Amino acid sequence: MTSLQTTTPTAAVNPPEPELGQPYVRNENACHDLSIRVRDLSLWYGETQALKSLDIDIFQKNVTALIGPSGCGKSTFLRCLNRMNDLIPGVTIRGLVEMDGRDVNAVKMDEVALRRRVGMVFQKPNPFPKSIYENVAYAPRMHDLVSRKADQDELVEKALRDAGLWEEVKDKLQQPGTSLSGGQQQRLCIARAIAVQPDVILMDEPTSALDPISTATIEDLMDKLKQQFTIITVTHNMQQAARVADYTAFFHLGEIIEYNDTQMMFSSPATKKAEDYITGRYG
Image 1 (tube, helix red, strand yellow):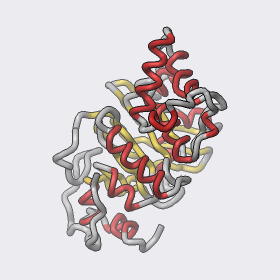
Image 2 (cartoon, helix red, strand yellow; image 1 turned 90 degrees about the horizontal axis):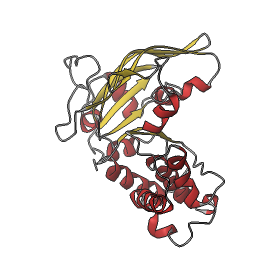
Image 3 (tube, rainbow, N blue to C red; image 1 turned 30 degrees about the vertical axis):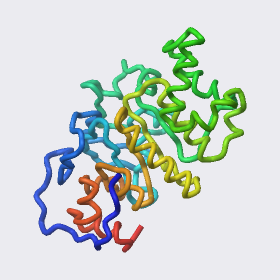
């Protein structure tokens, strides 16, 4: 994982503008196969505009961190990627969010299928009021991914292993998911998300309610999971973004001010606004 730079960030002098949707600097160690393409994305809650003409290309099998002050549009943007904003009355969305060449906002888009491909892990762990086993097995069964009990058992074990939880719960799979600690519950929610074999995992401040040990466990897990999945995470923790992310996007007042290789973002940001935020001058 990337370590936070100890030097004071210094904004680049008149950096060249990147191509539309691209980072200022590419991380040469990262995958650059396109996962999600966003163009001219705007969103309103009633008369209030929350997102303003966003352009960003998100790459496969990387961790992309979204940083910025509270209320700047990070979580709103995250919810655009699996259409969870559709559940909020009075929302208007314009622009393109594209996966595999298909606009996720198209009328013919199957929202249930989309949310299987783009999973979500929330700020507060929210296990189902079911057993640990059923928390993982329920959605794959509903999506007809498994039917035989032996296949379910195998899927549950794999998802729990991938989430780093199997050894802790293998002897108590029939106990309620809510009986686990906060950090274990969050890993159970991650296991639940990856059990349906998504392409993308969205994480909305997944460690903000956890203790430092659980936070470190989740961060290590993200580093492993990016070998299989594209991960997009919202965080207010600058050190966490620097540790886990390959790319970082800085949001401010509904706009993406800077999208950059994470090491460059925290050592030599391309914009003064990003430098001011990272160094704590506001936020």
